[in-house]
Amino acid sequence: MQHTVRTRPSTRTDRERPVSQWMADNAWVCWIEQSEPWALESQLISRLDLPLNLDQNRHNAFHSRLKGLRAQARQRARELPISA
Image 1 (tube, rainbow, N blue to C red):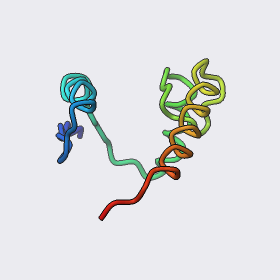
Image 2 (image 1 turned 180 degrees about the vertical axis):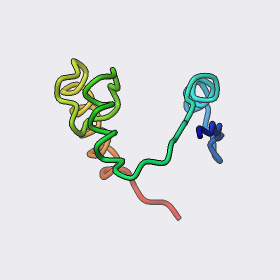
Image 3 (image 1 turned 30 degrees about the horizontal axis):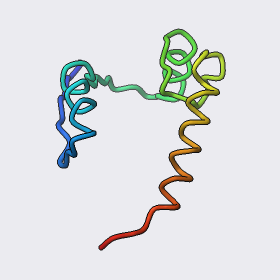
Image 4 (image 1 turned 120 degrees about the vertical axis):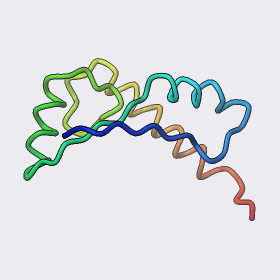
């Protein structure tokens, strides 16, 4: 049994709108019940091109670039002021 769900972000800024629209048009989530999901996850990551999954995905050509971008984003977030 498969289900498909589309969600929309609860907040949008001008810079997020293009990404939000792309996700609304292209990002579908499907799931199946699996007694050992970690086994299926390993198989899928090894067989499919899933550039946004870093875990178990060092073979992807985008892995090192994405890892660096995420590190930069974390550092930038730490440097930003916290607002209430």
